[in-house]
Image (spheres, one colour):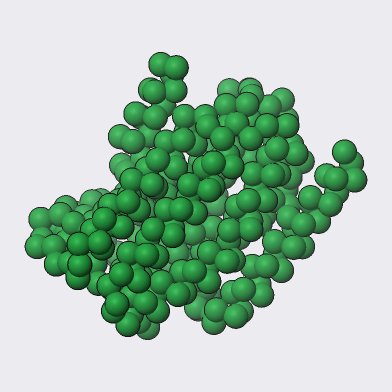
Length: 288
């Protein structure tokens, strides 16, 4: 029990630091790919600090409740994962956090926020099936939904469920808000509807959203690492390498492809899920 509490506390403290650094590294890599100098790696921390010290303007009080709930639910989701909890519950809680953020955008009645919320729901339709399949894939690979059991496997999950890994890396483009699927909001200035989902957020509320996304990024990288973790301590090194490669790949894709229309996103993501994860699941059923 003490180890579980320690893991939870370490995640709560370290995740925003690691997530903020990853955000800064992403900006630096993107700038280099575009031939620019770019901001310093600690720029995300400077931005959040400025937001926390700015005046917060709210449309209504329920908006504050939803944004705070989004941050709390995101932290709870990551804490549950890194403490060794149930993978199914992790993904269900993650979905709930996204729904709360959508409700925050709808509550403002602003045209750009509502457009962003509608697009966020469409994006959820694209990646939610894959997140559920990932939990099922881990169960097929190791016979448990518990993270503590999964990391004690004798063989890395990637050996048995490579199709699930490809599908998950693909939907990460949506989860990390990268082009070509950054329809609801974007970290860059090419968003055609201002900031979409977060247009009507300011000050502390916008800072909370940024911090929540840092927690979420660390969680996503943690799930990527899960595909490579085993009882062998050396697997930790391979998991870290895999996370670094996937993170760089997502940044590369972000800088290579322009944004697509929502219908294209639906067709492409569901096709990838069906071809890779669906085929992998069918093979596992046959082999079992």
